Image (cartoon, rainbow, N blue to C red; front, top):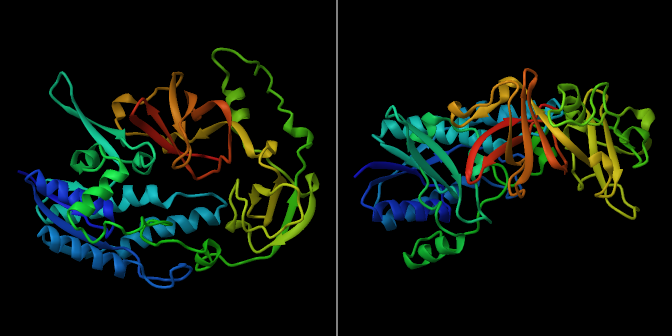
Length: 402
């Protein structure tokens, strides 16, 4: 029997995870995190964690397990929210949920759990863990996609390390979401019919511009439209960049480079309240109508405070064949599997949660890791995480450079 500290969030997934662990005979301890107090920009209008804590207490009482409460809000603000503000200020699109798992749930929270004597830390994530023992007797840990294809959350854990995986348990990873709801109903858990949380991890659903204006001032700028006929969309290969089985670094860099515009490339069609508040691929929030098809954000220039848009989902400015990850941002869940400069491998890749996996070839170069997709991808944005899979195994990830 192991002592398992579970992050009881007040949701149905962690509630059922706690029940399953107790049924397996473990010494289960609940730990509720308070990570956010500010309500600025939240659409609920109050701190959602108050309700979450109440539900966590009800579940702990029902399961007859102790529940501890820890306030990690200072760490959360410094290591997740401040990072988020900084990335938007640079004109990038961060994923705070990935950072929350790496920096809070499996770091600060893990340390709190170890103080309670934990052998393992459990969460309600829909993913799985496997262990492989090497010939030298060492154990390597693998992060696998969840069994429910509609709820697989392995992407959010794409930055975990071997040490973090060593302590991790994912009790609901083998279940489908309807099964989790059924178990919660059968065990009369208060969270059985509670809606899943949405929005930013521990903050909730937010009006993003209002939320960001805590640190980033609104500033009126111009919206310029780039037509689909813009001549530079006709891709030109660099010198020596003809298609080969082993593409040159120059070709990969050209394919991975984002489209770059100036105000002379398009016509002004409106204004906005700050380029920082928009991201590549965004459709809502532009406030410009009267079009046959929707307008989408193609790029932002936060220094000049210009937002570039294009009409229609098929606009060539929304699509790219490749992306690049800086050398320092390349992360392998098992460092023994890391690619070396000059090496290439096939993986399935996603650049956002719930995106179907995309076939791609990864090329490791001194300049970083290039991911060239079999088919062009829509809405690649700097700051997002690309994660690559070998079958069910999440092998690695990295922050998109530009």
